[in-house]
Image (cartoon, rainbow, N blue to C red; front, side, top):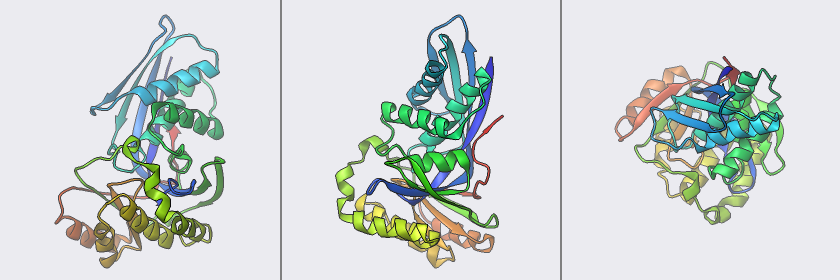
Length: 284
């Protein structure tokens, strides 16, 4: 019995680490998970193909699904990803969503999105890859489009869509920053202004919220805020640190993409051009 599913990366509008409230939207960078059940075994073995990363998270996701449905068997899970790891693009949320969906597919179970999120978030806490549960990131990765959330209560407060004509330009520095290395105390000084950004997002000012949030978290995490401002100077409608960084994302009209790439190309790092995801995760 086999199952395959994929889930997308997400970009931050409001990071929930300071207040427990967040916002994010999906982008078309994907992680695919393949699960094969082993009726004669008991162990779950994972492999992150092409990356030197631990498979602990996806193994936990598979175990949680098997336990929920009372299945006493082993499994093999492999993941294949085009999402850069540990740079703020929700690679962990995408991995959890894809792993849960692929396991459900291998069992022939119809997924229910709230349960997919619950299982993935529980596994993420156990694996130590999240501070808040990353409900906003996980929901955007699973459902596509954009979500504004209360992460502490695991509620979607509002959904939104970015015009499909926009492009998302992402600058990925050579460094990584794992969530386990982030100290929550770093965000106390910015919490009130992050709350302002969240309220602006709820009012529909997605671009302003994203840019303000990025500047605040760049300061709190000692990241370079000039990268986002460079994109805005070249026509981006919004730009800011995504997640805990160090990646920076910009939303732009197609006509402005080349100028943003040119200014960012003077820095050491990788530039990715993609588009908003409307479909989110899917069983394949």
